[in-house]
Length: 314
Ligand code: AKB
Image (cartoon, rainbow, N blue to C red; front, side, top):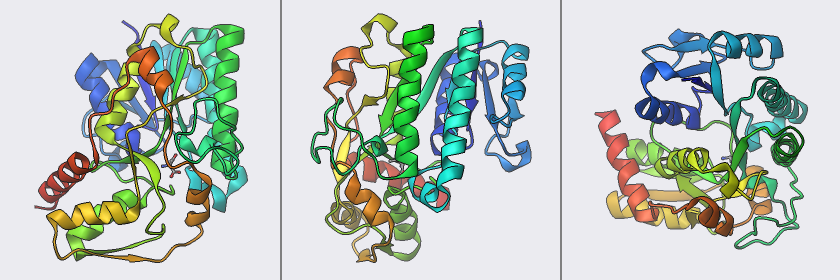
């Protein structure tokens, strides 16, 4: 059996997806890879490899040596960090993907690559943004995700590369912190609420954004990768809906568990990014093609987050 390679395994999605893949396929079948040395990773057991995915030769040598058949290429610079270094974000997000796609073409790999709701921009519909809505993003990250989606479809159409993608909303998880995203407030808030019983949101009280609990995101990823190829009608990135809430609604839900919790607001430049994104997406293609169904609503997500984070703090 060919092995699975997870690039960006130490990131927010990678940490939990690698664990889920290892549970499903066996520890030795899933090779975790990231830029950090093993000592600086959350992985206490192999297989792990320190990898510069920007170096195509290095990546291909690893793929051939380890007999890799499936790649989850998760490494990326997110929306807020990308605005500080737009060309670095473009280079990192595009070059890595093109390296993976081109090796997939020559060595018949199946690929998963994460897209994002950041493909949408201010010219698209705000609510229930359709699968094929206008995608005119205003961030470097969003531009790289639109271009990346089109490259995925190109490699599928032209070379038959079996590449699949999801437009993740903001992801909420307790195992690993996100870094440099606009939706990061929805993770930070839990840590600060438990430590200090207060949080200052950099997003305004009434700004709704699409969100998803990591358990749902991991399951969506595994389900899409398991789906029969002929069922898939989208080879750019699938819209997937789970939650849509505002900072105020999230704060009120946290307050039900921590009654002394107080929320403050100090919007910064990330507000402009949030304002350019839809409040929710229409995911009927994902539901029809591969049976997508979210499991966690706001209340279940908040309860689960607080339970796990409290255990970690003990
Ligand atoms: C970000 O905020 O940049 C990401 C995303 C929505 O892709 N979480």
